[in-house]
Amino acid sequence: QVQLVDTGGGLVQPGGSLRLSCAASRSIFSINAMGWYRQAPGKERDLVAAITSGSRSNYADSVKGRFTISTDNAKNTVYLQMNNLKPEDTAVYYCNARILTGATSRDYWGQGTQVTVSS
Image (cartoon, rainbow, N blue to C red; front, side, top):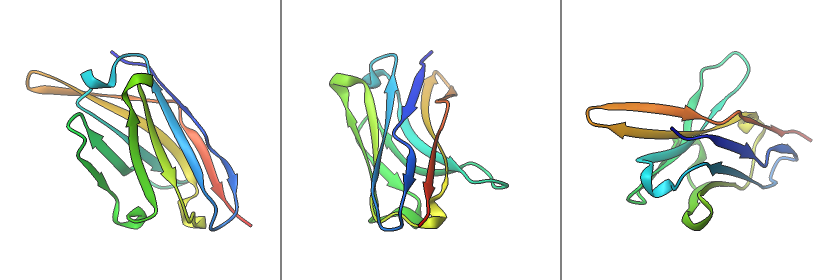
């Protein structure tokens, strides 16, 4: 198991930046993949960015070139640097950890942090 704590959301103007943090309760070396998802009102929760234990990352097309996912293994923390934010980035952002055990996988979630992009 792992507990995740998301922080860093807030209100920012279009074009601004925010950095989200996700602190894990165990070494992220032991977690197969970590990522950030977001959910806007009335919409499904969608993947924003993910990174594997082998440091391979992938991004939603809508955030490529603007968002960067990274890890600090010493702090067991995953970050999402968000630049050039747009109103359509407004959502609750959730940290995710996926742990594989044999042939099964289990997802763990943070509590979510609100990001609002508005002038």
